[in-house]
Length: 80
Length: 196
Image 1 (cartoon, each protein chain N blue to C red):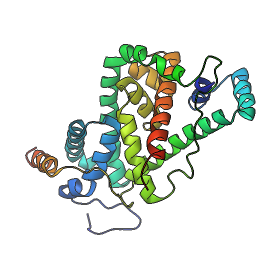
Image 2 (cartoon, one colour):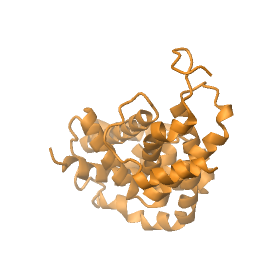
Image 3 (spheres, each protein chain N blue to C red):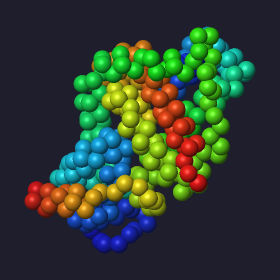
Image 4 (cartoon, one colour):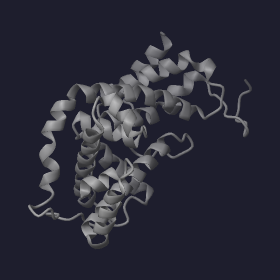
């Protein structure tokens, strides 16, 4: 079932596949949570990425280029 | 080009400032996808070099950041494709048991998904979540992380990913399923056990 739920995020399911998983979700709380978490995973991921792509956004704490890496890259850019 | 921001047009800053203004964002993006600091640094360098060589082509139609990320994305997809393809068969075989572990003989959840609460709604929580996602993605074998990122980040269609990774559609669904299952478990464990 979880394979089917995962597949629903990627491709069109057949009528019987769709029927099977919708029916299952009616009574299985665990799987309802599962699919909700998968969808949440997708949207959080995309939010994180669009935040990075937005120069106006607050960068927030997180990994940064080390000083050495910056120097190295700056040098490579100058001497191109 | 006139200096200063024009509200109707994206202004280009001095390319000498690109590393300063965009370096960390590019690095984070690359690190999230590649998992390795050195690889991420190299890709950032390649991206800025490519951008400098192409700067005449950037006419301000999008923001500078968007344009640079676009270049970075192409290079990252190339890296992901390389590392995923080189490990594909062995990763496919070695990850087979993971999903089955979640279910008992009757196909029921052994331990059902927990309630994640409100999830990462607050900005501070969001960056913690970010760290955890990054950690969890980096723990996946190359085929799984590559496929997941090409699908969720590059938003490629499954047919395109199948071509890039030389896998069948059925194998790809399996790979994505395994990747998501592992990520979900890793996220749940780390998110729920975080401090504060």
